[in-house]
Image (cartoon, rainbow, N blue to C red; front, top):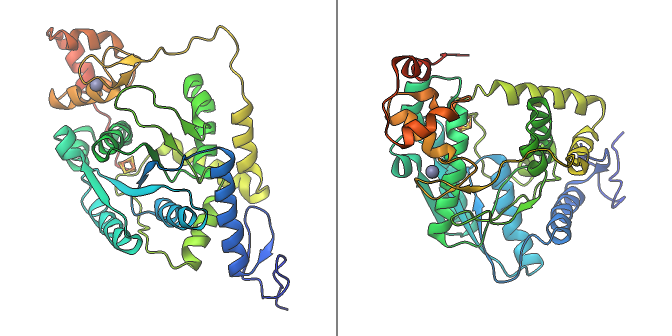
Length: 346
Ligand code: SF4
Ligand code: ZN
């Protein structure tokens, strides 16, 4: 027997909301989903009228739904924001080149300006070239560090006041779990924040309007709205550790859908004991970007790539950074350690 929408009690329900279990018709689902994101934005005071906001756009479902919602809510509720799309081209043939085509279509559909910054122009390296040198085990470390800085650089070029990213509730919960499993207290404390203040020059404040939106609902929303998005996975995506956290979380979600929100709330309420040492933020002596070390992670990784020592930024080699910084030659043993890369083709 057809189930009636539990919200309007008029139309036929077409879905059961993964987050609440309510059976809803399409229109009531759209409304509920949009209103929740609006509430997230309003209650966390994410934007101020007159601000210019860069939407980090990859062409994937999260950022496409984010761009669609930001435009819709900005008009519906008069946020008074000027919106732009900001994309990073990592240089991944067969993946990013195709997904950027989606972003370019989104730009036309949403009539928003678009800026694309590429790893090649910023760092002189594409991910294709990086993977050739470092293999498929630590490639996401390079990509993640470079992307963070690339978005900031693009945002500075666009002169935006803020960047919003498509991180959803599942992403945040996964990150909480990963930081617990790695014992990374500094990141654990930061990762649930819905917005970050500018941490220094060249670092643009960021926020996550989809922080409480379930991935499954984002997919449903994109599907029923017939949004134009790119759904292929990155060809260099081993990211085993995040994969385990993701599978674990999905298993938890299947027995208890509230697990995702529960993990986020646990992360939000964790408090770090007094006296726990936290990294002190300074600036990179080479590029001026924020860093808790003399050289920022991006500069260390880049130096490693340029010198054919790809392991320099992977693991604990801080002692060697000073040597590198002062252009001192490395011993044979040090070079050997930094050259060895475990190639993992899985
Ligand atoms: Fe970059 Fe890894 Fe993501 Fe691919 S999966 S885009 S290499 S971070
Ligand atoms: Zn640097």
